[in-house]
Length: 337
Image 1: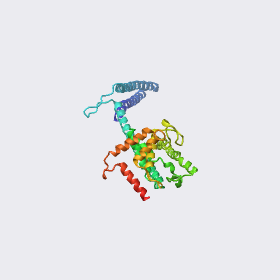
Image 2 (image 1 turned 30 degrees about the vertical axis):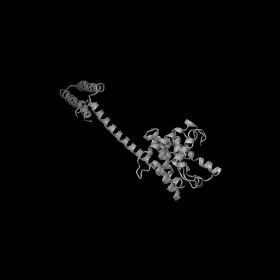
Image 3 (image 1 turned 90 degrees about the vertical axis):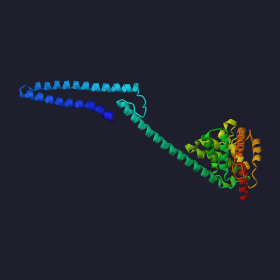
Image 4 (image 1 turned 120 degrees about the horizontal axis):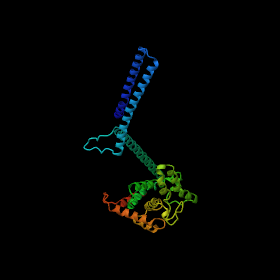
């Protein structure tokens, strides 16, 4: 702002002095004319001529000052100054320096505001995700044989996504979709959720509606809309025998096919009141039979690669692999029930 003040000072100070001079000359001329006995018309003419001369001179001063500054601004636009070197600022023209400083401050404020809003959005999204996971776990608590199902499916789904090299962000979204894939079970009677029980036709139809119910819950939240296809279609099958729409093959999103394989695998190895869960090898044999019809073969193969990769990782505790630990944990939980 100092340069603007200097520019104004350079223009208006001469004008102010000229106006004072004009007033003084006019007053002196009028006084002299009256004192010498001349008419007031003559003194008025003298004052007018003096004022015109002063205005002409003032116009010349103002036009010269504006022309000089216009030339400087044009030069700064056509040939901007080189960037500063050695920590010293390069000389800049009057307006260019002010514009650059104002732009820098505005850019810093905008960047700070964007970072603050991004942090708030990330925190809000994390809180929402945590709440959804809590709701999903609470739904499972209604049946002891479903306890931990969502977390295990989420782990398998994330592992399969890594095998497909889908990237960290998409893998995390698929993991979250797996955590809430059965959120549509909210409001479904407890009896219909119990594994191994023969269901009445009406109960079965209600149970089959849970993907659509879950999708409706997620669709109401804009930030969760990308989870809807995986949740709504995870019971579809490549041969068209799935539900709720009977889609086939590539009409089913990859995320939904991943959830279908992860969900089926965990269901097969989980125990229920009527039968123990299958071993991992038995479950994989069953899934191999289902591949190409009920399940996507590429996704089944990706699950197998994930399990083999995890089995090679050292996990301590007497060298147990995640699969070994999972089988023993499931057996222990079934025994306590």
